Image 1 (cartoon, rainbow, N blue to C red):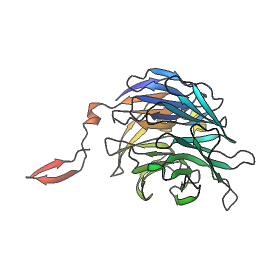
Image 2: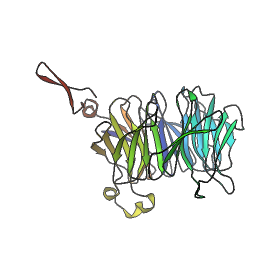
Image 3: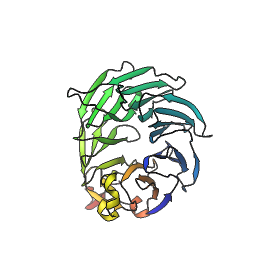
Image 4: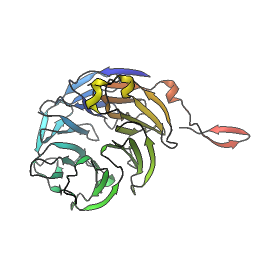
Length: 339
């Protein structure tokens, strides 16, 4: 597997995302400056300058014309992908943890952390308005403990807002009324990341409880669990194979006292159906914080606590790999299923 090392950030990586077409890679870190790269050769095309805090999340629209960023400086910003110019700033009361475009790219949603007396909030904005058209307050739970949102995604046809929380819960909210429609407890601990497949029929959650779980996006039913021996910081679903990629490692605070081998800073490959781990890719010197796989299935990107992004191109052996379980016997021969 051939990796390209992308060094453009000064601090640990928080988010890596390919655009819809897979020709651009957007990255964010704790150094306040998101970047965009060509996914074919790793050339950096530019940066988006203007934030004053850690960039926790970003999202590019369907046509790759505009980028949204969520920052710890209590703001979300709208950028032009072509010029890198900041078009609009959306001010929040607390650090903005996540951001997501709605289908149609006419509106978007953000999640923000609690700050002083202000609770955590979910906000829905029209792109051309500085003020949210809907605010959903997230008060303390029954035990007087704050439950903070960690990720937000729009469901198909903008029917629901899908939000994950640091207590392992997943909730669906109505984006028009703000009512909570459904809640499930998917994990025992914090959900670090959630990733959907391209047509949003499945999603996978990555948690600090050492597991990643695959769910049906229609009824939120749990189907598969991928168990590891370390916190899982991100997990993605391959679009071209029945494979799952997991990234993580032990707590970042103890990285300096741990060697790369012991810390287990590698990307792990699992079979989606059989839940078996069949491979690892090493290279990082800190926990992997972010993963994404190119929609064309030919490459994937990983970003870690060491500040590096590794852009990996799959070799022919992996791309030609067949499903290990044969389908059926035809004329006395075993026919191997296509991946």
